[in-house]
Length: 422
Image (cartoon, rainbow, N blue to C red; front, side):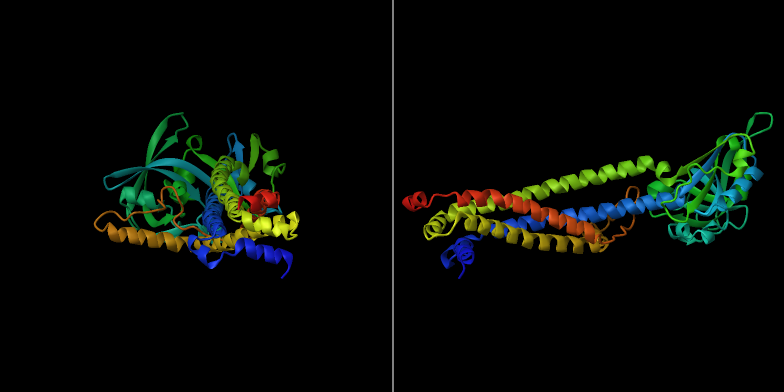
């Protein structure tokens, strides 16, 4: 048997009479595994939530870009600008949207709505937009001027569903400068959800033609929205010919600029959560240090005998570092593997916990772990192998560094002092 193997056997494999007390390195491995599981799960869940929330804002609210005109702009000028924008090579499609506010009434209920007037065929032309709009009832249908699609939350508050009539009060400005109310009647064609209630809480889609007629230019926002061929495209510096030949000023905003506050807020939240999980990892890693220190204290007699038998300090150091590496590797494999497994089935696990809680709270409202008002209704998990590998490698390197401290101390033990003591 080689020197390092003999040393490892003497130091780390307990004799039969010592096994009842457990092995300190097993505890270190278990500690690393238990700390890595929540880190891997949080990393995947938070990343999936951020990507999905940003995608919903980008594809259904701000779109890939918006072009605004600051000044008085007639409808035909907007339509010319859309044609010019569509002719740009980097643009996949472009359309006009007019947004305004209205007070909706159905039965005896009232609710403020954000009226989004869009082209009736937008869902057909923009499959990505349509993929984020799920209908509880009805379908995308803005074929008539009195059609309206309302969000799930607004539908509940108004107690309105498909084929119900909704009256909406808007304000228009007369040529004389007076503001007069206008009541329009709509028929609900669908009740939808974008999967993120904080985004679509007050949305209502109406035909663009209707938006031109009931939403005043002074109290509404009109812009050109569109999609890039790829998300890395940039329209800055591109001015449409219609902007040059007319008075006023055109401004182009990309989706990153329009969602700058949201992106920074979500990224800050992600960093804070990962920082907390990293601190837990550091505590688990230093368990390796404490475990090897305890092992060195327990095995002082064996270390002294080995050094008297000719085992060099470097072999003692290498043996302890190797033991720490093996313990951390086992913990990393178990922790990362279990973490990926939990992340993959996190939606099913959440549903199972909610079902279990509902079983014990029958007769009471079913508890929800992910409240629709604040979280996605479904977490679209995508396994991030690169991130998982990075977490494992970083933990392994930290464990090696933590193992070096007790290993060097064990190598510095003076054999004569140890033998005299024992």
